[in-house]
Image 1: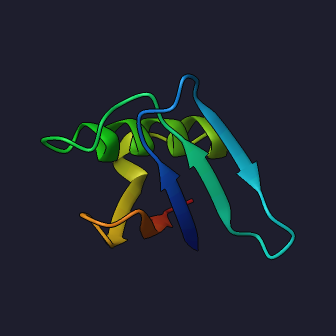
Image 2: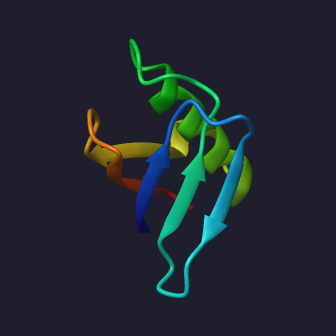
Image 3: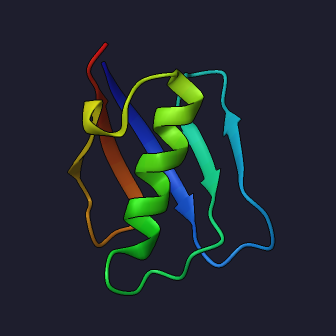
Length: 73
């Protein structure tokens, strides 16, 4: 399953919001430095969808706030 994700780094808390279209808006505590935000995003998506971290992959937008993630169920 592919999901469009809008990431907001350096937020004061972690949170996932789902839009009506099925896209996600994810607030992360980590800054977008050295892949920290991407790592935190993978951990949050794995927890949200109840899968292991190895089943979550960012397939588009590694250096962008707008990303596409793929979840293998």
